[in-house]
Length: 400
Image (tube, rainbow, N blue to C red):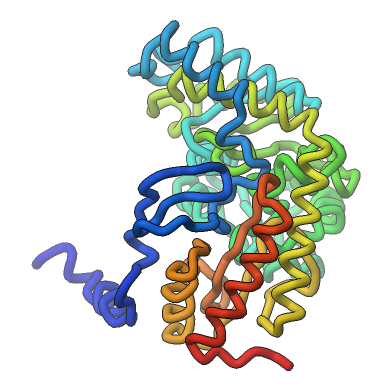
């Protein structure tokens, strides 16, 4: 038996999508012009699907620091953090993140995916329970699968449903509630305050993934928990450098006095080569810039609100009533009209993410648009204009 035969239905679905001139699964960025523009298919294209929320990929201090680190330390560590892969800069990065969050301890992972994988699998042991939102990111689900805990799901952002689940669990059991500040597909914010309060009522430890909210939520950009004033209810934060920080890597921070033992039990931390010095150096400078980036945060929110209002007024079916984040998800009635729309939109010079099951909740088909602090007002208006032009060309009926 061919072990790939099990994927025949997925391959058939992929082949059935009516792409003719462009394909979202094979997009190549031929030239990056700026944080907000690239050459794709020979066309100058506005980037509206990159997660580059704070626009840090061309931060001058970060680039210079990365260049200097290449000269000083070479291209990589060739070892895990537990062996030869801890340089002085790795410790400086952990200190920078801990200071950013106002916490005592930090571990840096090679990716944000591994941060969730490493933390959840280590914290959730045999006889423990991990309680997660049904719409959690794949890295959270995979962290649960890797651990030995019993997994309990509650309905998306449903505080009452989570409480009903917690009531059924043994009082003396180890329990970890995992939530995200902003959910990556719909761009909706979790009711973090209410969820954390209920979690603590039932004796749970808490982990908040701020991957899609770090940088722009809260006075200092620490995320939704800071914005809601409930940081004291968070036992562990997990985040990534691949969104607002503009590079690659992940982290976990905590005030727990036994936190450092996780360095010896978290397999994704122990058995993966550490981030290269150039990435570490750029991340330090980016986080320092984010910490003082209140004006950039304000402009990002202006962009998000302008884009959400413009698309809503044009009659598009949006997944949130207001802009809860820089992610604006546009719902499409079916896969065929959605694929035609994505293809025509990139021909019009706007790149967004086409999102389909199983990545999306409840089988929804979406255009996932994400804005950047470096988008100009004119670019936001142009995105709205080209969305409307594309709808007309593919025959998408908009709301009156």
